[in-house]
Length: 427
Image (tube, rainbow, N blue to C red):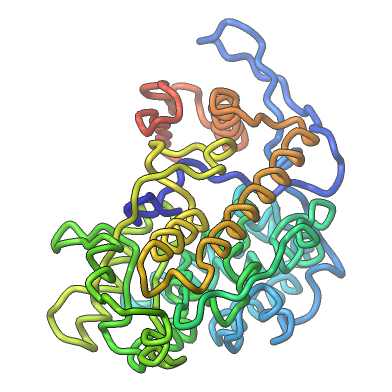
């Protein structure tokens, strides 16, 4: 997610919903002495998760399957290795691979065994870079296997909620390229909006780069080297350096028309805009990684950053944000196109209609997610979402047999960034 100033933010994560059953299965009754009433707690897996076993998880990830999710890159080596390890472990423990819960995580006995194995592997990696790469590859491998036969590869929604037929494709303005620098935890998330950019503009104009995946990051930085530092901009408010507005960054180039700009922005000299696509907490680490790499290539100067005029996204209606001046990734891209359209050298290439196409697709995604949540009996308002999150927390405590005294909910003030859920456990 990106604020109008370029930051990434997301308050809560909503897991994937099952294709069936289509209504919640109420499974447990738990008495909460603090509330002095019987509280019904339903399994998170019953309404926001699914189990997929057998033929859906069989077979290696092919290049065609990998690229079908929205990338043109080769299949990352470490992702392939982890997929192979998961399948070998599945045979060793004689347990079917199933996924569910927030983020489509492994479930059942296989999850326990895999958790022990991956923790041991992670601890054995002494280098922080290798640890990051392993972490990212494992997240992606599990999401790839867990989404097989469940999510549409184009829109990342469950098959029955596919929105692809409602998306209108557009050509992005010549000399402009988006890079979606996405955190692995946002990969294949249904309410992710970064995917909208390559749905609308195509994977060459809006390119996915997964944080911590060396094959992806190498492709992105090779493109930046060809373009030159002056043609690379990150939508992020760098506190340690001056952040320019779109007008400040590009308004000084008083060119008569866009043809002059085109002459200097051929394919390898395009204006490259990096959109950090991750949670508020993850975005800081992602930006630091960008800065470190930029300094290793171009020297001590900071990566150029720009900010946008504040504005709210339609996704605020469904997905809570810490504040209304922060917006989703796709809306940030639309805002950038709209502001560029106001400059003389970009005014003749229809960036306003391209921005409108992105905004329209965000609305389509919102409608698809809202329809699904209503069908599944889920809330669509901020107040109701807080209730859902608290039920997930209670389910977390119940599943792990934690004493009720071991968790607390602090500062229950809603979804404006002031609420806090704190879980402590000796287990």
